[in-house]
Length: 399
Image (cartoon, rainbow, N blue to C red; front, side, top):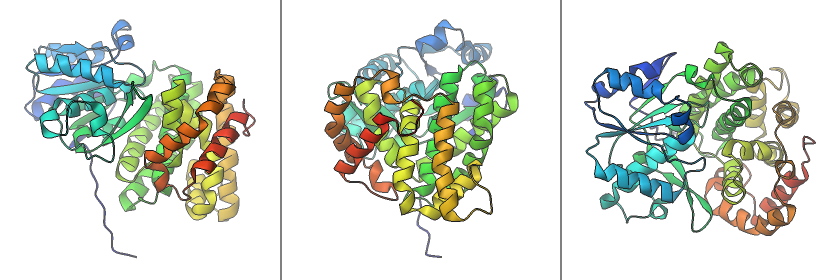
């Protein structure tokens, strides 16, 4: 075995248990924190869901402020508004409560608020490959979906509203100090979101495992996550109150987050971000639209790894040879999309002329993100355009 060179970064505390959110004040106390700004979304407030976080803080005597103007695809303008509120108060931490969007927004707020340590006051100044290692305040993440894994990662994805571009921002400034991973918070997540976020997690694990930047720790986490998600995603989708399935999906999402944060994502994510930016498709759903076709394209570059992924997910048998197992991965992902009612871009309602007009730009933005460079097979811009065309047609047969 060659000498190992790797970095591994994770939250200082991961509290994974049913009811973990009720211990938020205790966790803040461990780190000497007492003046949180809670970052969440309008639905979490209107539904009362945010009370799961606010009530334990109030019971502990803490005064809490809430910023709830986050949007499904976090934008630089929302982050700037959050920073303005942050700088008005005497806060000592940020709590991101919700799906990936509020958590990503909280992370970006911490980075942008530390502008004195970086190049300036615009979110695009921190776009990868810039190392966004400085955050003004620590972030405590409480995910309510399973999930983006954002509670465990050193990444945040923010849309540049002027340029219609989803920007990857990477660095230790985006890594939460602590994460409270409580599967009971996912019971109310609707089936469509359960499916989309679940496939997002599966994509994280699969891409981390086949990435050129994979390492022994990310491999162990990715393989475990694929087994958990493969065995439980259909049950979580069909039975929202299935505690065992919800718990497994939540653990799988966090493991997958740790895996890709310390390995990388690859071509699926590289191509997915432009779809989200231009056509406002939820991130997990755009991943799902792409996953079978991109996997089919990429298998030849890492057949043994894709084969092992198929075995762990449950699409292939332990005794299957690599070629057969890798083929079963593609057909298994196609079947999973059908079972989870994943639409093609056309079925989702995207206009074909608009899609075609954006192909060259989306391919350029995908390559510029750097993620395709970690793929087992690195495509040309023309090959990416071809893959976008294939996904439009819906070769998976589940449109």
